[in-house]
Amino acid sequence: MVCDMCINKINDSKINSFILPYSIVFSVAVCFTSASSASSIASTKIVTQSEQIPDDKQLAQLGEQKTDFRQGWYICAKAEKTCTMWNAIKVINVDPYKNIKYHVGGLNLTFPKGRPALASQNKRLKISLGMIINYDIGGFIGPDNKYGQDVSGSRGYIRRGRFSLGVQYDDFLLTISPEFGEFFRDTYNLYEANLAYKGFKNTIITIGLFQPRSSMQDAESSTGYEFMERPAIIDVVRNIAGGEPRLAFGAQHFGNGYMISAYVTGQRLGKPFQQNFQNNQIGGVFRTAVHPLATRDFDLHLGLSSSFALHGDNKKYGISARQDAQLWLSKQYIRTGTLSGVDNVWSIGPEVGFRWKRAVVQSEFYNVRLGRNSSYNEYRPNFNFKGWYISSSYTLFGQPRSYNKARAIFNPPTGSYFNPAAGQWGALEWDARFSQMDLDDRVHSYSPTGKFQGVQGGKQTMITTGFNWYPSSHMRIMLEYHRVHATGSKGNRYNLFGRTSNFITSRLQFTF
Image (cartoon, rainbow, N blue to C red):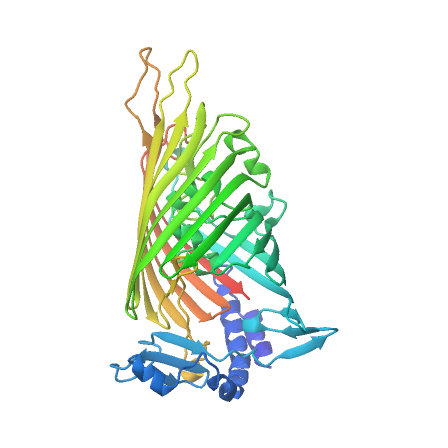
């Protein structure tokens, strides 16, 4: 009945297309949390006995305390006078699906954290399903018809429409993920299809089509990004030998305070990548990180990432960068154009991350080098392009970002299930980022005959800020403001002489 009332209110309202998705999400959130709250409260006694919840004596030894908010627990420092969602170190929700179990033939059907899963009686065979839906909308603030090229307007589309099937037998895991988002229309609607082996401690060996993680930001899940999209430099780096769906083989291992991963990669699947340099290319991705400082209030991350690619069917390569957003793919403000004689491409750079209580700051810097061969009648110099970003996030309420030692990243915030009647609002995070990508090199270099030998692709600087709201572990709403300034890009019809633009973007995310 509650859900029917929600939907009827939406249908009776005259809401424009920009606001309608939020109304639907808000209604679904209320309906979902109303249904889950009753189940959560009923399961409280069972979860209290779980090893997840330390008793008061254990918490006292850690200098912590807990508060029962009926749907779960807030855990805070002992020094806090009261323990609420505003100062919680950790949020532990009652799993409303914990006690749901069915028998289907010889298999047990359960729903861990809302994800359907089948398991044999001996637990050797496990089958699970998952889903990610991202609906993105955005628009420029005011028209921009500078130099005759229009970059105004707004649009909305499904950024990700991904379903995941996982079949595990003992230590072998087969994963197949079809994708119906807009970017995968020319990649046979496939995000990944691979086989992993998990028989060694803290180690995963994978072969097939997947995304080898090429940087700290790239190692994060799309469901937990601080912003809707990665910075421009991260996209440039991951496209060298990473990105999805990429044919690859390699392993990732972590231990007490360190992580290391290495992959050998081939070309990406799909028509857009079966051309120029990347067709039949061979490359690799390497990443290592240490976690030298880990306390209740502090985390320090230090790392190094590198990617390389050797030439494929020919020696042409080009780099372009979007405005740290994927809504306007064709409106690239900076790009090098197609460069000839490219023999190899590689990148290397450091990564740093630091958490202090509820605040996280992270940064990466990369140099991208194009090694070129000269022809018998033309000198072709090597090119170097640089990019970096620094981002910060602060969790206003809910559990702040925490360090994930297996992937050497910071996990997204966690909040209580959205239930305003009980004073629970999930988790809310504020984020800010400054990023820069420079595609200029040798801009004053000319041959003895007067031929230009450099690249004037342009330099792009972006400032982004926004909020992420997590009404539950299955839902997220993102709202961001972007300001981009780019210098002139030679031969680029969208940015011949430089541009400055402002736009707003938003994402509605559903996962299980």
